[in-house]
Image (tube, rainbow, N blue to C red):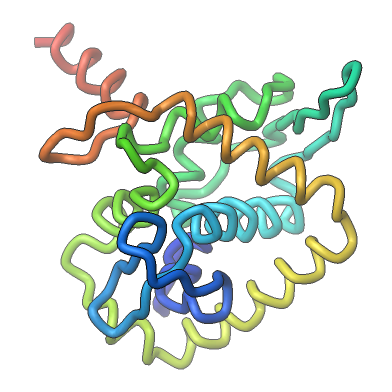
Length: 204
């Protein structure tokens, strides 16, 4: 059975999750068959679809907190998130169980350092998760198509049922992008990659 993360399902079928944007600067494409899609819209859908499924499966909880005129989304992990959730799941697992944390800080750990983090989030996830897999073969796989349809329905239901929380999630993505915005290297890396590299250096 083929298994892909919600993020990869979004990237393979962007026409179902994001709006087109032909701009070279604001638009992004990840595979040769795609048109260009709005970079921020892609990042919102990657995070939103992943969170919708994790909530549905009982791995996490979210709370919208209001402080003065500002609202923030507080994330709590209830149990270990499986490897199937890829890059985002790995980032969420760095947060201790039942430790309320601003969602943007959990996202920050695995967002790529770049001048355009939202657009390059998809590139980074594809590099980390697809590796030698053929994206066109995955896109044409009947099991993955069925999974995509289920994920899309779950995501749309989440946005419809929790509109304030969805607005809050998008703002948390914006904040995470601001935290990692910087000079892009030849190889995309995240703050978590840097921490892991430092740990390995200390072991040596």
